[in-house]
Length: 238
Image 1 (cartoon, rainbow, N blue to C red):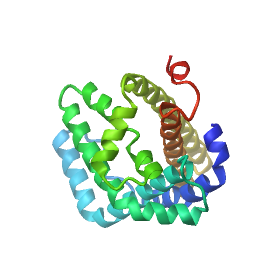
Image 2: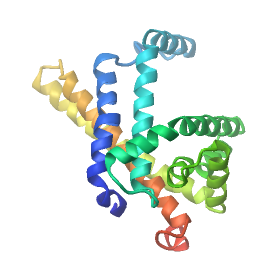
Image 3: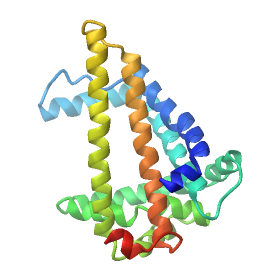
Image 4: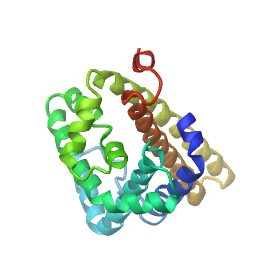
């Protein structure tokens, strides 16, 4: 929370443009696959395949913008960086391809772990959770070195990080879900069941953006503590 407070203006500006806005536009103009209440796995897979085929460009562009926004926030909170929002945008743009390559490698390693009964995949993901801020803080141009750096920094803390992330993810998801449900009920009652899609989409986009900001800043805070730039690691994780 201290980290967020210290950088709130820059973080909110970047998140508003690169996270909230693409999320809202996707919800408002693209929507979600039409599942029609089906529970058949083949039908669900077909619906998602058709949805992606029809909206591939929008989905790819939206995810790239959201990923870039999150990456810029890492530059904002990285200890070695200061300067203006424009400076951080420029630095993030220069290293964005490295960030994407590192994400792909992280995803492959996590997927391989998930095939081994899920828990190893979650553990690997948590050991590699610092990759984006390492790239930002060190201007790392080698994605493999970024993965190695995260693996080294999180040594002996993989399961502690996993527990922390799971707790926050569960609480965050429940909180956002309850708020969305309440807004849906209120707008439904106010419009005799028709609802106000724009308001519901705004609330959904705000909730999703808030969670992304939260997790980004948490990763930054973990990095600061594991590199000795925050409070005592043992105190935090024990």
